[in-house]
Structures are given as C-alpha cells and as structure tokens.
View 1 (cartoon, helix red, strand yellow):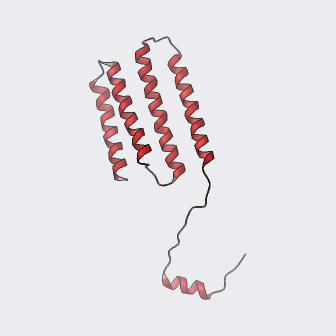
View 2 (cartoon, rainbow, N blue to C red):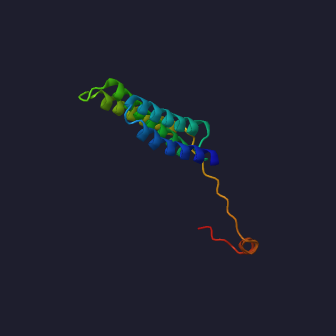
Length: 136
C-alpha cells in the first residue's frame, strides 16, 4: 500500500512541474504528461491499489481513461488544427470504450458474500450461548 501511495504522490507532484516547465514546447509537455499518466496507470495494474477487486477495477479503468485523454491531447498538439472536431470524436470514443470495458470486467466477476468477522468480549459470548435466541 505504501508503494502505491508513494508513486501516486510522485506522479501528482511531477504533473504540474512538467506542465509549467514546458509550456513553450507543447509536444514535449504533452508527451511528459502522458508518460507520467501512463506510469501511474501501469503502477495501478502491476501493484493493485485496493484489496476489493471491483473497486480496484474501477480505479484502474479511471486511470486508463485518463491516459486516453492524455493521448488525445498529444494527438491534438500533433494535429495543430483548432477547427478540427477529430480530437473530440476520439475522446468520445475512448470514453465509450473504457465504459464498455469496465462494464464487461465487472459483469464477468463472480459475486460472493464478503467475509465478515465479528469480535466480541468473552462475557458476551458466554451470555449469548446460554440465553435462548429468537428465530424470528
């Protein structure tokens, strides 16, 4: 858990640094930002941030969507056409694809009851063992 938090912290510190230091070089800026986002996504895949699988899939796919938007940003800089709607169309496609992929992953997961452990005092356990219980 510490590794994930440390990598997240480093990524979130590096994102504004890369953005502000390279404002005069838009392609370099977008490539740096995209590589940082890709590193954060890859870390979430290789070192799952959460124990519960469904929540972990949601976090990983939100990071995947973030990387997709950053790639659209790279494409926008390379395209260099302010009147083009192609980046918006690409972004819409990425959004739909990641949403479908997330739904597919969540639907394929087997549902199971969560393990719940109940801890009680020794006196409470003895009292509940000797007293009759209502079955209603």
